[in-house]
Image (tube, rainbow, N blue to C red; front, top):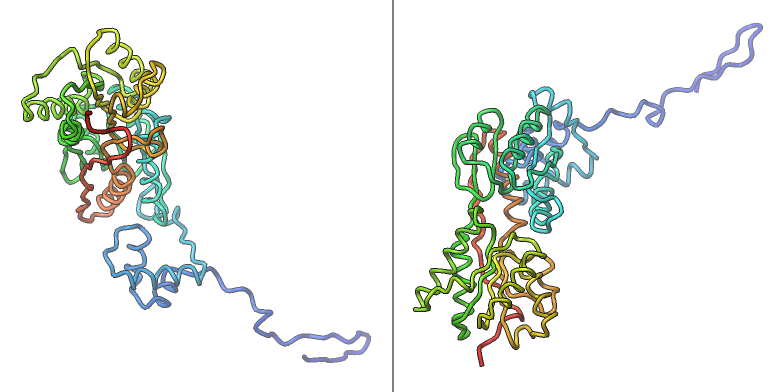
Length: 356
């Protein structure tokens, strides 16, 4: 501390600067994080945008440095510098469906830590509406699009991908700007029906999806193949079309009863249809699985909690969303996409039993 006195003035005290009085240093930079973690700045950047292929130790070192230094990258500034909006467009078909909820959860987790935000729109299973929604997303300058199922043709998707990268589920695509993941619906349906046949069922009803839906067509093919391999004649009277919603499953079940067909098991083309079918059986006083066995398709989160818990075909919905997101970010950042979606599998719970 320095003091001095001048005539006519009171004492003036001037403090010598100490560390606590210095201006607070600016926010941590990407270079600071890289230095603290002992890696290159580019490695930190690639870990942040989700495209890095590094060891777990190195990744953990970077994440620890980010947490310790309270590093918050200015994603908008980085995006503007690269000519990006830092937003991803997501087209779902039914925003109220638990099927898409689970996939969106995977997308959301896939975006964590990348600085990207999502814009979600719905196509309502209508090809023209899907195209309009994609045009809307393109007008908002999204950096890429995730298309969850849909009715658009592959060629239309490829045309849009010339403007922004697109990753789509429910179709097989692989170009520099478009990638598609397709599940083996035919094999999944085969597994479901084969399970029932192994339990001794030979009269197996099928609540299908819409006749113009490719997934539904493939699941019908799997149903047909399983019957043929077992030497069971296909009975068209046991096939009733639904639309993948709970109400259609209930109505389809009632139509089967109205035809007075005899059957000991029901395969529903998705879990929501199975829920509706289960309600129809309950109202008829028919016990599941004591009187009729029931199998669904999807393994939605609620299927573990139905009464009784539903036997079904598991689609890795969460993994599909997460892998689709990672793949899109790889395309945007010029990386390679190698994500593989786990296969479908039969999940046996308590709605199926051996024929007595």
